[in-house]
Image (cartoon, rainbow, N blue to C red; front, side, top):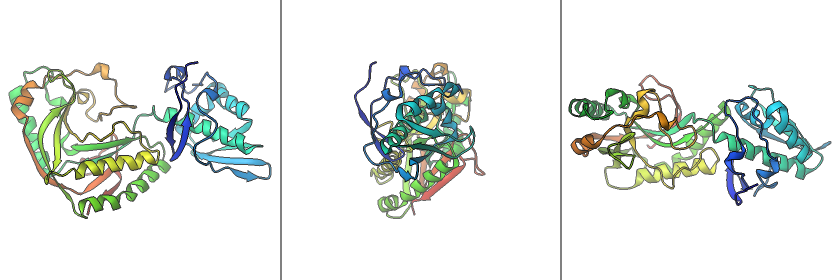
Length: 355
């Protein structure tokens, strides 16, 4: 078996030293309720985490309870219960899992503390492997839907369609909904109410350093110019507006990077880039088939094979320095994917203000 070298992995805020087999071994179908991992559980991870697991001593031995979203139970159970049986056999423990669809704790019991610790470690690494494959449900966002920005965006759309509609792939369907203009800081797969609450608590913890950076005031921003994601301006999937702090500082970048760092450290977000790429999407080919789509690199990303790119060369030449406006940013939201609130923006599960 070809096994990668050990790496450190953050799971629910605990640090593990992990040996992960190559992805091909999983061979799972994400929608297959009968999925079972076919290799030895011992191939997936070492027995011990790099820091402590809370294992309780009982009259009959040892016990540990884990909070696992019910949508992930099937990956621990496996086809006909095979994964669960293998875990129990290899670690000499008993694993009690709530009924499918019922939120609760998975309870591991055993005669030896080391056995329970080993089972907990393996379950958490197994769960994390499949958590990363779940579509994201929420994202941290900076709203860009100030009335002035929306007005100028609609003017931009109108002028682009007037002047560039003959260019390949350019039509009204690929423009962002003006009420949902935003910057994505990072994406989150929050799989039950408990995880949403935890994310909201984490966000509240960030208010102190944000207000320290902003001086307890809203952050004046300007939205000027456009740029594209791809290497070839004739084959573009995403065109975005550039956003910067009016005083030329990197305060917005620092806030975004520290937010991601905080959520990654807590185990609720996967780091995708060294620094957050701040961009306000104005045109996206995903919108052709799904106006509510959200672009994301990594797990949960829509199938890229069915995107019809557009030729942005003329748009870039004519609107490269387009001025979308200025506004004061005063909040970061935990936004729900595929949702709309009374203002037309995404429904917020939680937010904090800069002032």
